[in-house]
Length: 624
Ligand code: ADP
Ligand code: MG
Ligand code: ZN
Image (cartoon, rainbow, N blue to C red; front, side, top):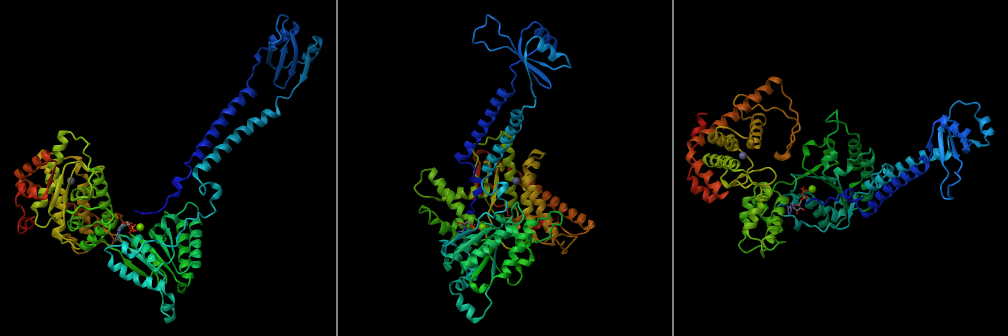
């Protein structure tokens, strides 16, 4: 999806570096051998008195007297053959002033010797050092060029220049508004004179803002393709380097190259990685990032837009960007790239569907309706996944069946049919999921259930209940949110109703329900006691799925009230779910038994099993 090359993980795995491991091993072996030859002592250790006795017996031929030890050779016995090596001995030297006299008396050849043998000293130092060096160079090679300590100053040429991106607007579906806004940039790049002659101020930077996978990178490349200008790109995470100064140097390089090639596009992906507001966290400072950001701001101010360099940036977290980036003359224009609506999803599916062979029964309209909330990259994956499945089943075209499975896969991870569940666990999961489904079907505004399965999916899910919104949603009312929370709690409530105890399987449900309740209190002003007063939370994630929490600023007392309100809300909705399940206890039973037998139930069968539970009004909320 993201075509960001990751060179550094590839380096150092080739055969060359494996050989240098052999060098190291060989060096170790060599050293062991050398040590044996040099430091091994094929001398017989004898006591000083034995030595003196030998001396007096005239058995000693020759001695070398060192400062610490005396080494010597014995006379060869008369019956020894030519081949036997002379017997050598050594003994510790003792204070013995008459030794020399005695040696002379017995006509022993003697020499003085310095124990601190030069060769030995050198070897004992040089060998380990040499070994260390070998190891170091081996490691340096493994890390690859640019990672070793010697190369830290150089900026790795990680700027990607492309003469032609090969993408056009035809590759981007369902982002008509963004395309329209970018059209002006394309016109300008095609014909800068026209604009500069009129003296208008040309935009310098355009920031594409939208959730991940909505096609921001693709759009930027398409802009370059449409205008037929070179495309320089760099990802924000590339800037954030270990060594201070490298990121800034790269920015400088990038702008220098770009200005030489104008008109062109400079694209900075994941701008938030480098453009995080400065000083947002005083403890965790990042000088490197700050330097890079300053360099970027400087470069943006420094160049003349009339030359025809347009900077495109992309981010999914505009709220954390340094405000300085958005000032006039920098990224002063923003283009929203949102999640595609029904028509947009259909267009994207059609575009990607062209790349695979779809069976005649495939109705992409149905697929588009079934995938609200999915972004371009998800939809591309659905098509691709379906094609892979079709290939696995040896089909000659992709059918609805594979597309259906692919959606489930993208939503919940692949089916894990092989994961065996103990019968008791399976039963619990069946009731849990039935609980979700029944509550969803019994509430006035919850989204209808499309499918329930107790086949394990993905890494953690033991089963799931898939609801399908009847339309794209941009707003939710309080009642609708309360219904959602109730559905989330339905699984655990069912466990309690049926088994009178609970399990760990509801952890995720509880977490999501609590989070939703908290947001209703703190952000949407939907609590009874705090009312429409919302707690200021500073820089908020713009997209619901961003998942980052910013510290909130409110008094202790308010924080406690928030906790109480949110807890009360969750408890009330849990009670509501339990009462609903108790009311429809027999239906819960039927559904769970069906699931235990068939593992999956679809919308139509569910309607038969449950009948019509949905009330026309909302009587039960009123008396909560
Ligand atoms: P972003 O940069 O917003 O995270 P990308 O541009 O990297 O998203 O999109 C990833 C992939 O998803 C693209 O390569 C493309 O295959 C697909 N895709 C995303 N949005 C669209 C779209 N609007 N039309 C067609 N394909 C899309
Ligand atoms: Mg991207
Ligand atoms: Zn659940």
